[in-house]
Image (cartoon, rainbow, N blue to C red; front, side, top):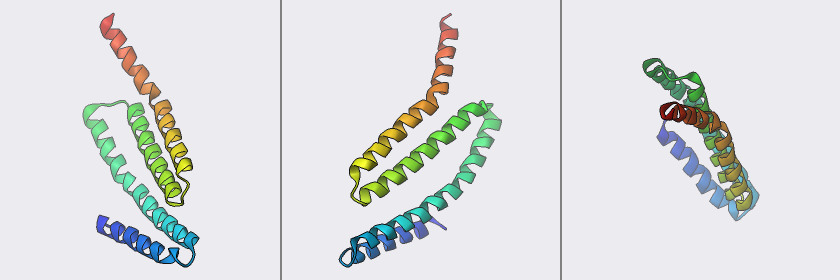
Length: 128
């Protein structure tokens, strides 16, 4: 699938959801949720290309694998949090969506702590 295909899926789901809103509002939410899941899992399949590129970068620059692992975790947290919060907002539960975003940000902070600590150790080595 290309970006155009994904756009067509999304726009079709939204147009149908708007039409279904007059009949039964929850059907529109279900339809958008299904389209969102299709797009979400297609996006996950694209991560394989990103992983391959990161491995090639690691081979060229000699980056520790821990840092790339942290980067991939942060990308995953961001992708899942944005997807889940968007679905909550579309369903009319904006406060739950905001809570998911906050938890995602805190999760990214927790995951990135080893990188921050390594940076601090490096700076400590330069100052000593």
